[in-house]
Length: 571
Image 1 (tube, rainbow, N blue to C red):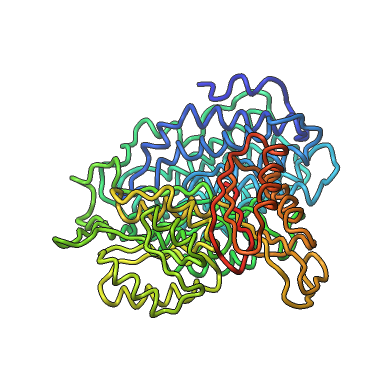
Image 2: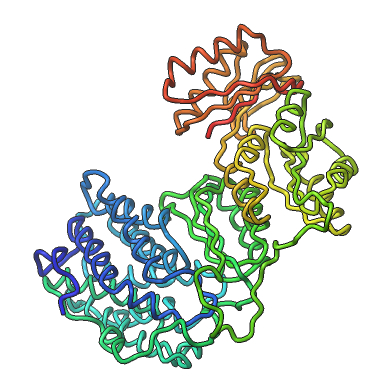
């Protein structure tokens, strides 16, 4: 059976250049698609984290789309494009790991051959080792008998080769991976009990088989694991343990996160305490990433407290493309569940006469309070509020479930303390750590009380995280800011809390701030005016938006806040 057809158009190869790498990626997608159902059906776990084959296909598809988005001039550019695209599009645990495999190759090859036209056999040997190590480093609790072991086996199989040609190297790697797939049931008891091999490892072996096909110029046939698949039972009908962790966690949470590496290290620690199957990988390649710089990370974890997992991401940076899967969805738990109770931590039904759910939002002005009230929230006028004021506001709603919106960084710790006290009284509280009232407006716009509590929290957190925020402020003293020295009375333009513009004319600073924020993309701009901004200045700002950004919808409200003449949100 020929697993790879159109993608294998020529060969054999002695080195892998940009065109050869492209052909390998296309061949990998082709072979994964052909075996997608086979890989999906190898899943033996009663609470699966998605379909492995489907996730791997989606991940490689994202990488290939990024690679083909424009003309590729050299191998370095091809590696960067595919690695970043795959990591941004990675789905599920297996998707993140296969993306990390390609990122490891990219890191190694870029480090060895920046500016070189192609990667030779020795580069492949070293690259496979770096790729295997990268996969293992991305997983919080590595488990043998999984994709990690198969990647290690491929690297080990070529580590002792010296001076061999490229075709010999990639063939040895493929054979090592295929043999490791066959041995995976010996390493993971769950696989042995079900009589199957590891699904993600099988997918990785197919990717390496595609590499052999491209290098040698013709398909070499399926890995032995594929041949043996015909005689093996499919997964999904037997009770077995998870690949990693335990089945006590009912939700898979995955999102992209824009954050510096220092914040991500703290995020890892927090998520480790919330669940298992934690995988966090960054899209920045090794030579491109500097300390303190933001990059995009793909975060994957299994938890019960969905809200806490997303809150942790918002505290670390800006999460987006948030995806939550409830493992019980779409699966028959009439068998194969080992008697494990299905978790539904947010299915609390309110007692008779209780309001089911309420939102409490911190408001820094009378106009903001009216805006929040019009959206169905309970505003707290003090800014910043005390713990007692927030606790009193939550009690006064009469709701069993409360979503708390602090709306500024200085109120976050107070909101967390108030939430803990409210939980001790029996209320079900989740804090969506909004850092600006415009993020609260974005969150309230998607609120749906008829949804499950955790689903509502997810939707509101995603909307808040997708809203970039800015503001005008007036300097009260001399200070050295990230934009330079400011004097008392200067108008400051802030983006995400950082001073980026210093000027004297509020309207001019606002226009420059909006240009910067809209240049990063956006369809809706929200303006909330406060004390100190004249109607004429507001008119200049809205006219500028209509002229410079005609496709952007603009909503303008009177907030009445004293601290910031203008609040800005871009979604």
